[in-house]
Amino acid sequence: MTIRTRLIVYVSLFLAMVGFGITVPVLPFLARELGAGPIEVSLLVSLFALAQFVSGPVWGSLSDRFGRKKLLVAGLLGYSLSFFLSGLSRTVVALVMSRTLGGLLSASIFPSSQALIADLTDLRARGPAMAAMGAWINLGFLFGPALGGLLSPLGYEFTLFSAGAVVVATAAIAAACLPDAGAAALTGRAEAGSRDAGPGPELVPGRASAWPRLSDLIRVARSPIAPYLSLTFAVSLTGSGLTALLVYFVIDRFGGTPSDAGLIFATIGLTGALVQGFLTGRLITGLGERRVVLAGALATTAGLLALVPAASLGPVIAATVLIGLGMSTTRPALTSAVSCLTPLPQGLTMGVQSSLDSLGRTTGPVLCGWVYGFGLTLPFWMSAATMVVFTAVAGRWSAPRREVDAPPTRPAPGSNGALLRR
Image (cartoon, rainbow, N blue to C red; front, side, top):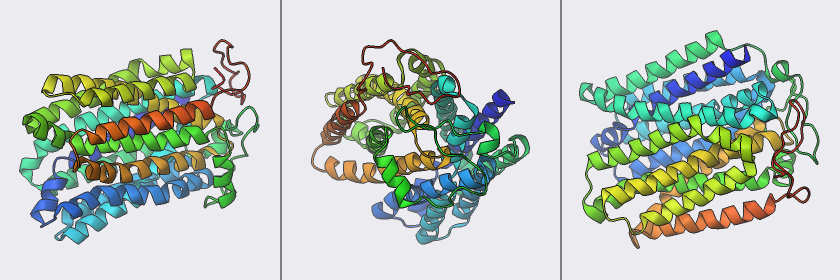
């Protein structure tokens, strides 16, 4: 049942990302057709991410109370509604509001899914399971935009309605195939907790707090997961800024074409799927989350610096492969580390991490876009400096005080021993 449930979660996320990816080629053109200027187009991205930032911890906490399945299905249905409303939009304001609503309602998808995977895996399997989740997400985003490009000649409405239909079908699959049990029924007791904090609290559906409390957030800030949450924000800021500006850089630096841009992003997606599908889980098992996080962050930084002198398509692709390698190892390791060391319920924890990820996606494009106006390569320098600072702080902050030279070992399944002591 556990393997079957994990596969259903992975397929659900794959289809959800296909639905999202379908809209990528058409939303900017629809916004332009409705008369949107640069500010309105940027709002489509930033307000969506800002809405997820605000609502992520709430949805995660609600999944602790009512169970993962209900919140995952509700998020998928809300997400599909936003696509239908976008297709029906006849003004820029309506389009922006539909995307904002989509951010609010879809923010439960990733915390619920990540918390469910955490519920279903012991500490030994947590990292590989999170890496597999990332691989399915990358595959969805790889296929989605291509499908959207094929559907776009049939009209923007048809393409957006198709995306909504895909996500509705995903919700139906999740509703029919996922177990009804809440988090506590799946695990009996939360596996969350660090070596010093001890086991996490009981997860009893209907009794957990529906809203994150200030004391919970303070506890998170003082816990072993704090450095990994801060690096989550930095990675998200860097990745979103790169996504927003890479096409402009290619055009301005060497006259790149839309085909060049498509090849670059396809390379990033394919790299992510391959690395997370075949490499990241093995690295986490062999080296531990902390070492993989730090190595992946350094690889990302090297890739950003490699973009600075790039003056043709080949070097840009090589640099983005390095960035994709770094981020595809860092992200699952961060999620696994946070999941294994948290002193709070899994849903709330994943909601907080998702919120910080959304905050990075909100600020990254704006900040990098502003810096880009002063120089083509300045965003890459800034992003690399951000990664260096946050990685150094996280590495020092998370450095184990004991057993620094101990060989990598895994605690027994179901225990709360720290994974990051290596």
